[in-house]
Image (cartoon, rainbow, N blue to C red; front, side, top):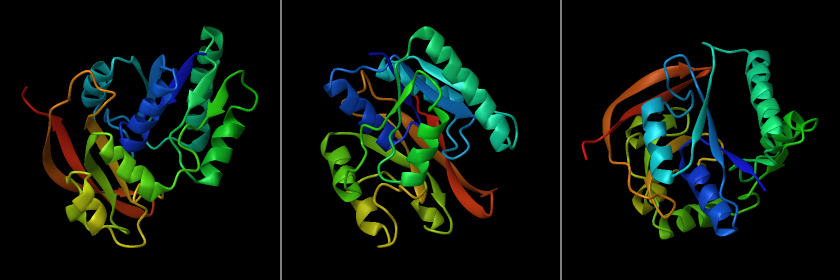
Length: 223
């Protein structure tokens, strides 16, 4: 079975890769989208850092470049072309690291309903507090690269995702950030052939939709 993993570079995607590999399903490709600034819209991670991450994981990565402020139709048109290519290549499944958001899962399944590519959810239904601990217990290391200003103080951006971070989260913030309160970048763990050395830079605020997100500029450190 040929599986492609939808890739954010964050903790849930990395753990999903680990789960898939332990089940004997090593994804043939990672798939991520980038904006016109060569960064992911939600995570703010640059293309070069994703490329270094994929190289350390030993998995090819495919970038889908999106126009500035793409409409939903533009996004779906570009993703439909990717899915059509996967059909032609014989890809069987597109896996996602979603855990419990029913509307997100329904949307993904709807977009693949007419394709010969199935949607798979290797982390679905897990308790997020247990999932966060399992991620750390497995030896993964991640940095928080973006936080939603409506949910968290900007000081959370740039912190290590660790037990201290989890303990500091407000009670109404999901420990896996499943509602979008924060996003991470994973730079070491059991799925890596070698770590991706990173360093944190400035934290900047950007308007996203009706809210403000705080992004930590993550860069590759000197080896």
